[in-house]
Image (tube, rainbow, N blue to C red; front, side):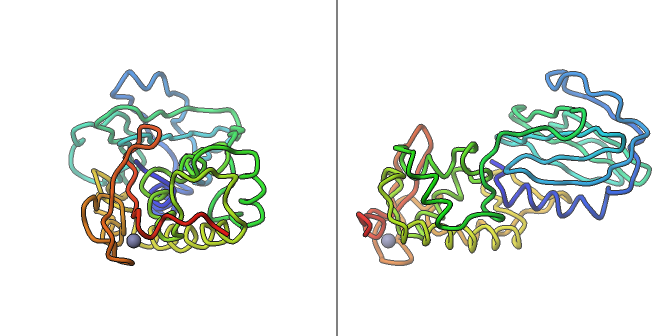
Length: 262
Ligand SMILES: [Zn+2]
């Protein structure tokens, strides 16, 4: 679940807490994570997000990559014992970071120097309509799957794809290459607004998402279609529906998201 806004929230909260601090101990609790060693005594140089991936850059050219998948999140603690579902603990002299992950799909990998991730454009950095329109010309995917394809666009998952398409009034099943330039303009604009607000809200706690300090995000209060099956569309009064697209529950309003473009 953690998508761009949730991972960006972790990055922003982690930087003032751990950049410049030295790792004193690493403890892998869930052996499914594999061996993670050689971190002790290294200082954290930076924290960066690539799509939905979080990178901790360490001194002497090492980099630790977190992929949170379904339920992974990081928690900062300076007291108390480990919480249930803790899979990894990274300690500092002033506190520790725990990877909490009930479903256990998250991965943590250590790389020599920055990993070359083959990821697409970042919606916060280069989401201009000409770029979107151009990369969509080679894709017959439904536009929602296109937005969620991390090799093309990095950071958008199921929740934000539903919200962006509703705001832009685009049918999630339309082929990506059938959208007009104007529609990509609308999608780019909607993505910018929604993702920026979601970051300001520290993400959406629709399931078990919590920020670095264990607090719920607030963006779930602003969702216009996600999780609203059967409810009234705030824009047109139509009925929100939920249908599967590529195995993912897709929320949309058939009344105001049915344009053929132009
Ligand atoms: Zn509607």
